[in-house]
Image 1 (cartoon, one colour):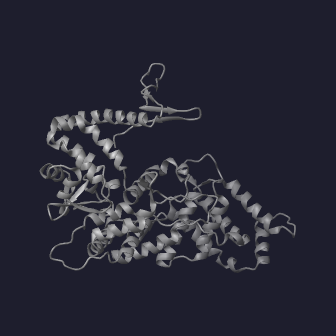
Image 2: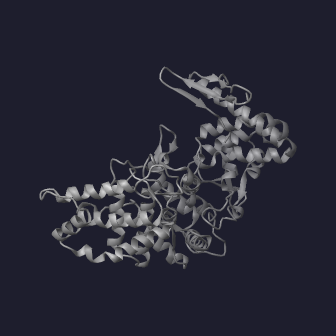
Image 3: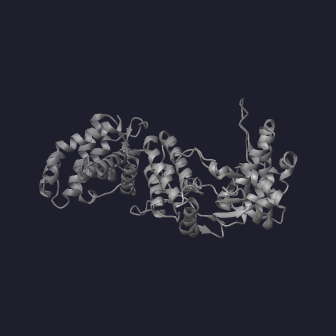
Length: 508
């Protein structure tokens, strides 16, 4: 059975027994005594009745079921979400019917798994009504710590989109048709605010407080609660990656449009971008949620994580690491592009710039103590013209080109913009790799293999400099018997008297 089939059975049971919800406490006990006919002591009738309902559910439970055959707590949560969203957004169902799933979820938890046939689901729907009648404490139980926020965000986005919200299997479906006008409206507002003005406020208000000087990075990460604090509320994550990509597309307004751009509408832009992330519903509230993912749900889980990474968690690299990483390309660069001999000096000067820096080629030349013509040679190759940035970025998850370049060239060819050394610095490595591959397309594969070896050398040097002991390519396991091909190697092994860490190094 599917979710709509479950929902229909529960709703039929609810409508058939609707008059029972208005009974007095004594009438409820009398009703349930007839349904679960065993002698009851007057003092503990409610507790004994709850135990008998639970025992009845236990008899319905079956452990040896596949995911396709089972009805479990996950399905109950999806039913709760479906009725919650349909009530909030369309006025469908009522709160009492919705609360049936919260009550049932409180008793089922991870203990029970039921056959998903109509007869069993009908019995469970009856148990849900019985539990609601006898247990007042569970009637106001709430599932999903962000469903209210998600519903409010969906309502705002639907207004912008001009398309109704679609709810399927307990989640809001964000189609391209729905998202395209939302994204276009955010772009329009970003253009009016001015990309540089907006980014300056974003770094000042949201990013600067989360910069850890000791770690040398912005501490942007998914929030996680604990199951020991079920009522813990988590602030929605700000989709920094999404806002970056919107803003860099509109750094420099068209010359013909002379409206002042003072960052107006900053808070509304942040809220609407956060609404997009909320309605995607990709944030996981509990730190152990990945442990509870079933095999069947793994593709969806991976997709949700990739959406969160794309919208919320832009990759960042410490400037000193970028300076180390560029050395991986030295051998090939000297052979194929000797004109870039001063690349590292120009790169070092750029990586010392503050966030959202606008700088001229003359200022970089003065900072790097290099001739202006040599600096211009590097800047021309490592900057993307402002009117080519994210040109194909028409949806929140569209491909972007901004991360592949460290600098953006302004309409004035001698002026350049850098988002941040932490977020754009590795663009020097990405761009250099692209240039080398263009010079030697045949050797593209060889370059990748050489870089793999170079990054291992780089890692070894960093460990040596920090006096961290390690084994390098010193451990492998081989299979036995006829198929003796199962050999596993590790790039580095770090160990002390308590721990062993197997480290696989990738150049990205």
